[in-house]
Amino acid sequence: MTHTTVNYEEVDAVADAMHFLREPLDCEQLGVTVVECPPDWDGKPHDHAEEGEEEVYLLLEGEATITVEGEDVSLSAGDALRVDPDARRQIHNGDTESTFVIAGAP
Image (cartoon, rainbow, N blue to C red; front, side, top):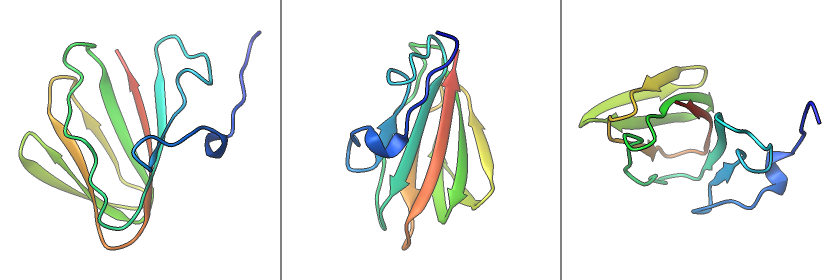
């Protein structure tokens, strides 16, 4: 098959917010996640050093902060942030809902 289609809303959310699409889309290297953050939601602090995977966080709606290696990076709708694989990062959502698309690959 040359393509795969999936609606992210049909993929069960992890931690009440994250729709992981790599497996449903049969991606071999690219990870894609849609994150619908409720107010005051915090993501899990993590890095991807072991996998060597950099990530791009694209904030589609709302406002949020991503802490990267202890530095707070404020994002508004339309902003994108690239993070190195070995950098520790964590999403902190603000007072309103926000929606991210996160793409990652080695």
